[in-house]
Length: 270
Image (cartoon, rainbow, N blue to C red; front, side, top):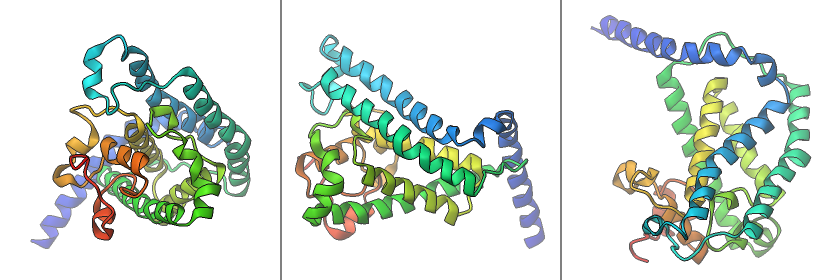
């Protein structure tokens, strides 16, 4: 029986790898670019701006399309150009001036090697979920400390709270210290789990999307927190409460740490 189950598992894993292999082979045709120090910055900026743009368009249309307001957490608020442009400029500036030199150093010290085989699908999903859970835990601890210790808040985290009503492009409006802290968590988690490069890319895409969605100011029927059961995932209203009240909902995504430490507040309570 155990031999039969083992062979079934092997077939399942092999089929999962075959499912991702064409995609991985396609990406490897860009191997020289992916291995260059330019790729992490290019990938991060294009993914982030690409996820933000639809919400920027919605913010522009919202005053003229009343039906959109039913999905906005703050129906009477739309960010102005004077709020959007500094946020975008800050993201571009930090990636060019700070992130790119760090990627050059990392590239020089340990060049990226792309394996010929794709990861198994189940392994990719498992590692992405674990990376999200680890990041959620690490940022929760970091976040609570930076709200409880005034010096830490003023020095590293206050910048992110300058916009009391979040919008998509304000997601990465943060200090260099906060940006590097989040980047450090990301890097350590994928190294700890020894993630495949395709898994790393997938995790970053998911992580950026969830961050942008949480700051978007829009609560749609298909928003992530409505797809995850049992209230395990906080979502956009959950994070909006943190920006307006400061003393609750410190975890970026999931709700278990706030429940355990008594810092969870429901949007329904509001």
